Image (cartoon, rainbow, N blue to C red; front, side, top):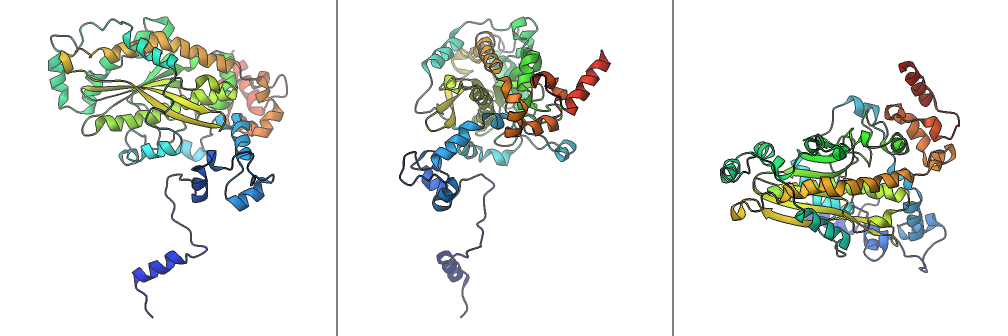
Length: 442
């Protein structure tokens, strides 16, 4: 009997071949049993105290297709150092070309919202909203007065002409003429404000040292902390988390090879759905930024301090519309679960009411630099200072696999005194070579 294709598909759907593999999407979508369990239990596992919970996690997994809840929770909480270690860049990658960035990957951007959700990042405000402290902070950053620059394209006599001119131009024109008046340069301010010398900015630069969810970000403008902002002791403590940044190792704490802990990104887009496109890129950018702070604080058991607290900002704009967001974590310690959300601070049209709001974003950004950055930086440094030296002892290094990372990362590039980190124990050959090289340079 000859089977038609339709009949054959119907039979196969009723009796699937036992060894036939389903085609899997390039997305990291959870398997069906885990996804079904996740609807009723945290992390897709049986809650503690359940009758079916198994003392033998392997036997439990064979029967239920998921790990026991207590086993997963122990894994999530017990290996904090390993989670935050830098990822070594392979030799082949170092010799090859750099992969494309998120800014130029148009096709990938269409799925980034869904991809972010799979990784616990949501382009919305959480049901818990934000902390009252963060809400008061946003109002203060909006309201505190700042002097606008003199003789700019936003001056009263040429503002309307400027808006008409850029309305039909491309993204590069908006970046050149409008962006500096919406998001002023941190480094230019730092040239006259010593307290801001800890900041470094990037303009259309790939975050080549980041560990992205999607393709690596390339924001039109971003700000973070430079390496010289930290003391030598702090850099030593962060060294295993940073890795060989010169060679391109990927770190949770870094954006570019010179920028640590980014906290502000700006994306400029023109054309149809411009701001939605920019919002998606900024959501990815700031998920990485907030994640860096969360993982650092998890390492010293202080993550509860960050719950519902705004830890980073983003600004999306086209030739006239501006959206300002704050980004924050929601930390559920009971379920060992961390999610990332955003909070819409302001959205406005700079051309409405004869340009009454044209300096709003400029004032907000300047207040971030002057008011928020010192507090934020002090908080980061306090967490770094609490990293315990025991994490770098040989026994702990062997348990977490950190010893291999220290060797392969060649931490001499990071100015790390491995000998002092190991409390006087025998240094590695890399450390001895680095020390010998330093003595020759004296």
